[in-house]
Image (cartoon, rainbow over all chains, first blue to last red; front, side, top):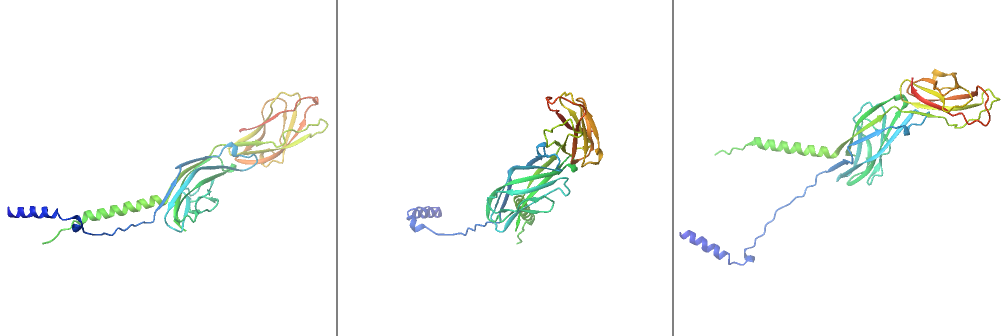
Length: 160
Length: 153
């Protein structure tokens, strides 16, 4: 009972002490860590490219069709980066070319023929976010006949 | 007194963190897009010279080039007079980029389709077509309208 009374008196007195006399300081360390971050996105997951009669010139074996409906968007906080592109098809029937148009950052590697080996698509995109239009050019020869190629195209951010 | 540490849950947690982290990075640095390149059957024909003068006094009055492209199999090109006309016309094919129909000559008297080039197989090419009149017709007569068609053999 004595103890309880003592504790009660102690806290009552402590509450009368001004706040400045009670203040304490402490600190802790906050470490903000930013890992290498890379993000890629395409505006549409599927592209249908069809060669039509309008793409055929009588007397010429080569028939071409172009698609520029999709966009590639990227963001990376690392320097010295590029974007490569490749297709899943090891032996396509027809030729498929690709080109980055009007990149907002970096530079286009120009028109390239897609293959199963990664090829440069965009260069010098380091520490930026940007976008470009993807131009696909499908080429078929009359001698290659009728058919279809189903590609899965992979864009990858890689070290330059 | 020994303190027991349950290490199994810690290991599972660490493994989960590693797998989750590496998967997220992989998804962000590469992306896929599917593309279907479709090539249907396509046929094209062209006769650059649209109007040929026909002179009744010459055996071979006019010549023109016929160009074609077809990615189909077993095709032929037929020819017909599209409108009724009193004059018959002989058409002879020469200088063909295709081996099958060299020197072929057909006579157009009615509006029936007649085979001009045949055995075309996934090809693009050209030939010269020569026209001659089978009979005289008045100079005031309208032009002979000739229709070329790519069709199955």
